[in-house]
Each structure stands twice: as C-alpha cells, then as structure tokens.
Length: 514
Image (tube, rainbow, N blue to C red; front, side, top):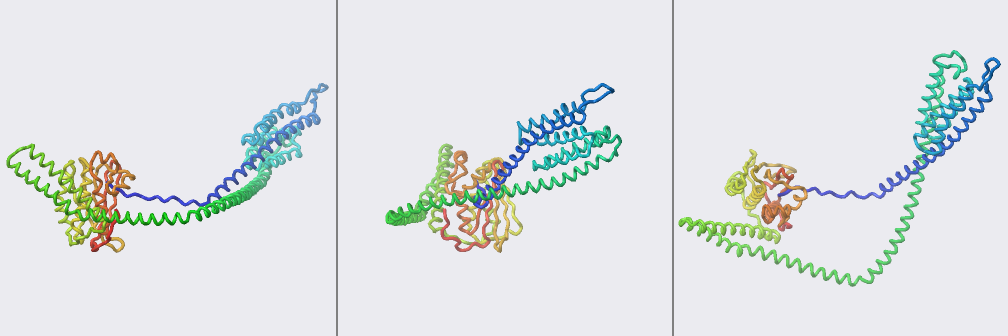
C-alpha cells in the first residue's frame, strides 16, 4: 500500500546567530553577577547601619530623656527602654539576614521594611522633631543603592501607614503636636512618593547602564574568543593544508590510475546492466510461450475431468492453473520492469472510452474484491468522456490498485472515483481508489513504489505478494506522463490517486528509472 512522503530539509546553521545568542547569554550572566554583587554589598552595609542606628537610638534616648520624674521620684524613661528593646527587635533580625543571607530577595525587602520602622522609632524618640523626619528620606536614598526600585514600595507603604496610624492615635509622637490635621500624613506621604519617583527613575537608568555595560563586556569577550579560535583554526588549517598538499603530491599519480580503473569498471558495469536488461526484455516471448501452453493444457485437462467427475484430479489441475497464472503474472511484471529500464517499453496509444474500459475491467476485479467480503462502488463525474492513452497499461494500473486494495481489506469497502481535472493548462483524468483496509504509516508509504518492496516483512508474511504491483503502477504512470500518490493512516485505510494526461504523448520518456 502507498503514501505521500514529506522531505524535511535540515535548517541551515547560522554562526552569526549562534554567536549573538551566546553573547546575549553571557551579557545576562554578567549583569546577574554584577547585580548580585551589589545586593550582597548593600545587604552587608545595612547590617552595619542597623547596628549603628540601634546604638545611636539608645545614646540619643539616654541623652535627651534618661529619666522620668514623678514628683521627687525618678525612674528610667520609657524612651530608653523603647530604644533598647524595640530598636533591637527592629534591627537585629535584618542585620543577621544581611550577614548570613546577603543577596537574597527576602533579605532586601526585610531590610527595607526594618529601615523605615527604625526611622519611625527615631521620630518617636525625638518627639516628632522635623529634623528626624529627614531620616526617612535618607533611608530611601540608601535603599536605592540596591538599584532595585521594588524595594522602595514596601518601605513607602510602611512610612505611609506609620504616619496615618500614629497621626490618628499619637500625633505628638510623629508631628510633635497634640492635634494635627487628619490629612497631614498625606503631605508626608506625597513627599516620600516624590522622592520614590526620582529614585525609581535613577534605579531604572542605572539598571539600563549596567545591562549596556554587561553587553559591551560580553561582546568584547566574544570577539576575543572568536579571534583566538580563528587564529587556532587558521594555524591548524595551515598545517592540514601543508600535509594535504604533500599527500596530494605524493599520491597524485596513484589517484589518477585509480580513477581510470574506476571508469573502466563503471563502463563494464553499465554494459552488463544494459545487456541484462536487453536479455530479459528479449526473453519475453520465450518465457511466456511455454508457460501459456502449460496453463492452456491444464484448462483442457480440467474440462475433460469435469466431464468425468474426479474431484481430486480437478482440484489438482486447478492448483496447476492457478500456479501457472501466478507465475505468468510475476514474469510479466519482471519483464515489464526490465523493458522499461532498457528503454524498450513502447506505448500503444488509442482513443479510450473511460466508462467502457472500467466496465470491462469490473469482470476481472469483482471476484478479487468479493473474495474478502468487500463491497465495490464506482463514482463517475459527468464529464469523464474519453482519453487518448495506452489501454493495456491503463487497465493494468487500475487492476493493480484494485488488487492491492482487495488484498489488504476484509469486510470493508473499496471505492473508485473518476473525474476530469484541469490545472496549469494541462487536463488530466484522475482515478482515486480508496479502501478501508489496514492502512500504513508514513515510513511504510515512503517505500511501497520500490520494486520487490512491501510495507514491511510482516506484511509480506501475512498477505503474500512480491511487491511488484505498485512498482508497475508507478512506472506506467510516469511512462505516460502521469503520477501516482497515496495518503494512508494505520487502521483507517489508504487512498491512491492516479493522474494521467487526457492526451498522452507518443513517447513521454524513453527510459523510466527503476
């Protein structure tokens, strides 16, 4: 059975594209390494800054309000305890992260939040003095050292929430007054957002410059590697050329002698092939004549045995006749292939009524189809009409396709569609034979038009056959200027399509490759 195969051409290798991709990957690696180094360095910086702020808060609390007085009684001011314990709670954990897990995303965000909380604590310790509020702006500037604008978002949220909540419940701790405007926190948040915008633009511009620098570095590295490789290849190539030149000089005469010998051998092989093909083609009559005589005598003996019923004798004679027909068909196929290869297959063109030809062919085809309990359906287009072609070869094409479909289909349906087709200025008769048989894979359809070839070994073992039928179909189609193709899927059957010119030329091709 058969199919259309698609040839996939390998995509061409583009060294320039490969170098560009390699350079882009190297630039991305360099950028990532540089960015990670910045994050680690900044994390460690903030680890020290956290410790410094904690100590500074304690010192400030001890200096400003070390004691709280109640009449003549004094005790340590609550600001001192807040600076020690609350400041430690805020600073210790991010400082530890900055030392033990530098460069991690979670470390950056934790430090950003803690830095804003420490600013809120310092503002509280100073009673909301305006000078301490600048700690918030300085902290945002320090966080921008990460060159990651996303760190500014949670820090800004913390500042806004701190001013909102403390402004509502403890306005003196953040604004230094007992009564403050309920919208004053928005003013502070707006200034923070303004600084965020400036810092975000700066961060993004810095990131772009880092990427550009990484790309230039990667390109430079790639150029250095390329030059080194080119120099190495050139040196190696020069050495190889020198060796090859010396080898060529030493073996030149020997190679010329071998070429002459190969030419002589090739001419001898071509002559032997032509002789074989001419011999097989010329032996057509000598091989067919005695085999036809064997078949004829077996039929005569069958008729005599039927007059004197002897069941065993009739069965044996039928086997002889069947074997003779099979052998004759095989010899005919082999000789046809040989005659095509030798350029001795000629066309006997005549005007053919397509409907009449197929009607006569059905007498031969129907027993083959019904042998495996298959149904046969013929569909004609209204304009089928006539064609000028070789009647015998056209009948043989259709007979082989029907035989192939009947062999591989059981309890199924075989359908023939006949129509005219016009394309590119050429008119054709199209015969489409469809079956519901076993079907084939794409790998199997790729080789079914080769002589002595079937879909695979198991197909030959199960269904028999020599693999010549479809090879004959392909050669006859090309001989008459047509073509045959197939579409098939395993388990869904096959569809063979034959296109033959309505007006076949006297001789399309002297020799059709086998």
